[in-house]
Image 1 (cartoon, rainbow over the protein chains, first blue to last red):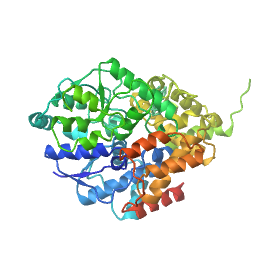
Image 2 (image 1 turned 90 degrees about the vertical axis):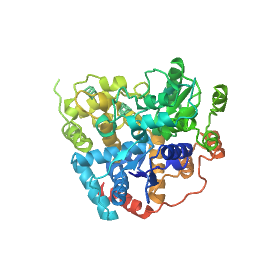
Image 3 (image 1 turned 120 degrees about the vertical axis):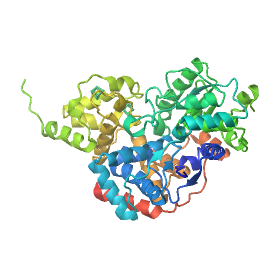
Image 4 (image 1 turned 90 degrees about the horizontal axis):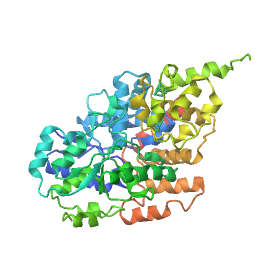
Length: 285
Length: 182
Ligand code: SF4
Ligand code: SF4
């Protein structure tokens, strides 16, 4: 089955390395994707912060496009993923506000969204047992000695009914993948705490406090790097707050490294905190 | 002391319950939401207090709380509330009301949302450079994040020029409809 790929705005800009590494890993593991034609911004925090209608209608236009193109959507950005899932869940529950938003977007675009396709996150698709087994077989350079803290953030696990594909308080999918890649995920307690997300530009100091705490706690647990699944989390953790700076990977970059995929120089080159010293110390450079 | 309930004491909780879709009346102030809320340490009010203000019909206090602008929408409160109250939907509803009454308690946060959405309305997709410049003009803080922006640009993380997404016209009509329905 081929997926529609929904990069969202960040993967075309600040999270470019997430885009590149995700496509490369999916391709190597035999998951076919094609970018959703004509996609729009999901509205992110700013939509639900100011207009319920936009928060539903913007994701629904994308879901309707996916339905017209006959494909489930893969959305690597946790914020986009959550927006798509929450809109679909509200419609499925028959909430009036969602019915209105769907009707309006249908009237404007001529394309209905009836709930026939779903949005999924690469973390879910890649962490099912078959995919993990496939990954294990394909690993060429096990990430030996890499102590890494898996960080899920908010929107992959919450709201649980709409978004979570595993236990929302104790997710394990990322740890499963990192272990399969040969890394050593550490145990820590802040895996689903918030990084401050969309407040980064308007309240940077506040976001800095949240990110500093996350990094300090990851280090306290023995981690030398963080693994993320969201471009907002990754950027905030790399750039906000002063304490405990450490390399922050996208989980797909780490999988790509273990798979020995080409082109990864162009992923790591984009990082604000270079992962190269750590990788060469571990002989993974 | 005799208390005269104001009109807002009756209408406000109902309006918030309607706009947010949340059964605010069910809250029994267990504070599980605030115990997990990442912004509890920073905001003027904790989320269980915001919910309480709504129950009591204290409209002015609720709408002028900075807490409703600092809520990140992380949904921790929603996931943990024993009464299935989604605090994020409550703050969403209160923020929209505060905007309607033109009194956002956190102007920088409001300006960010405004700038972000303007880019999406014009282009169909977000455009970070335009968003950052516009927000700088609005907040008159030209130096904040300048270094970070330049470092990101040097690493190819920011597109200098905007481009209009295919489908931008449909997106603009969705925005127009959002205004009409408000
Ligand atoms: S968790 Fe729910 S019931 Fe408890 S204080 Fe918060 S909103 Fe009220
Ligand atoms: S959604 Fe908002 S109020 Fe609820 S826990 Fe997160 S930041 Fe706090």
